[in-house]
Structure formats: structure tokens, C-alpha cells
Length: 65
Image 1: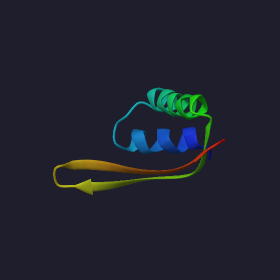
Image 2: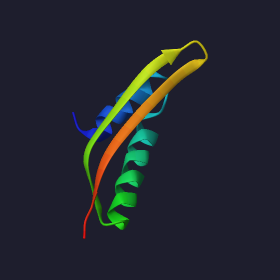
Image 3: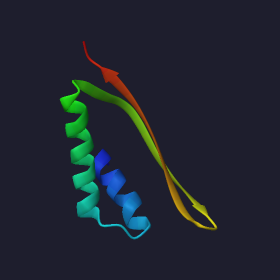
């Protein structure tokens, strides 16, 4: 499963729109491309709390010279 599909599946679990999720991933990719950066590693997790659902994201980025 690619990163677009992973993000889309997480958002679908909490009632989000898969098409919108893919657009968000595209925008994040474009943002890092503009910085001449490459996403080396990333992790997304989701946790339920009594006041709602929290999504945690960690991204490791290489800024190229």
C-alpha cells in the first residue's frame, strides 16, 4: 500500500474523504519538492480519546544541498 492509500485509509476510518486525502498527500509532496527536500521516512498513527480522535504524524526529511 502506497502512502496515498495509507493516509486515505486512515481518514476513511474516521469519516474522511479518500479523494481529499490524496490531494493533501500531493500538496505535501509538492511542498517538499519546492524546498528541494525528500521525505525519507514517515509514520502516521491514530488514537481515540474521549474528546475525539487524534492523528499523529512524524516525518523525517532530507534537505538537499
